[in-house]
Length: 182
Image (tube, rainbow, N blue to C red; front, side, top):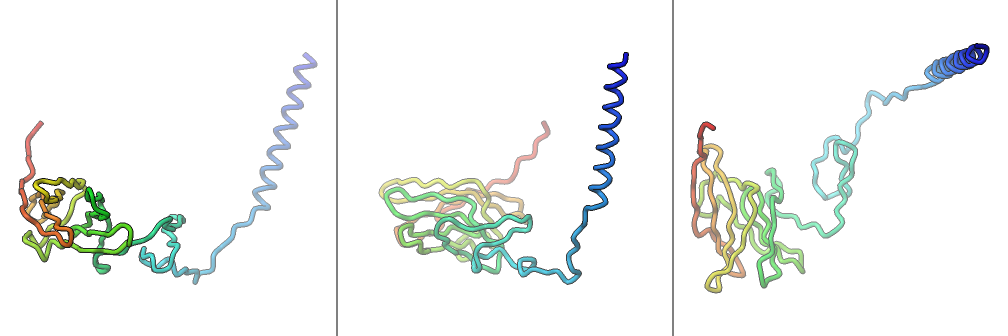
């Protein structure tokens, strides 16, 4: 019985000591306040790589490890969706929002940009992340990918031909979304 009493007393003293330490540490903690005019140039910056590295809004840095190849219209929201190399060539095809960009891999230079607005397609066409496929038939290279016109609610499979210098859209295969009750 006396042993149980001693353990209870020791536990009580240990508990009391922990409470005192807890309250003392809370009292000695100081909060740091930022000045009211705190502002960083990162707060207004766009995610361009003109001034690397880029600080993202959630305190992560974007610092590319390789060569950056800039393409597309900087006035629009444009980024790569997918890429694939053309077999037998040092050319990479990059699917972007508004067409395809062809890049010479060893030189890291843009060779050609196939733009939806300048070719035979809907003017409001945008790429979808559906993947790229390159096939070679009869010594010609064809690229297939998906695009959509949200206003018309139509989707397309787009077929383009690459002739080692430029690309042109050969055909589009349109289809409307299926609505069926399951």
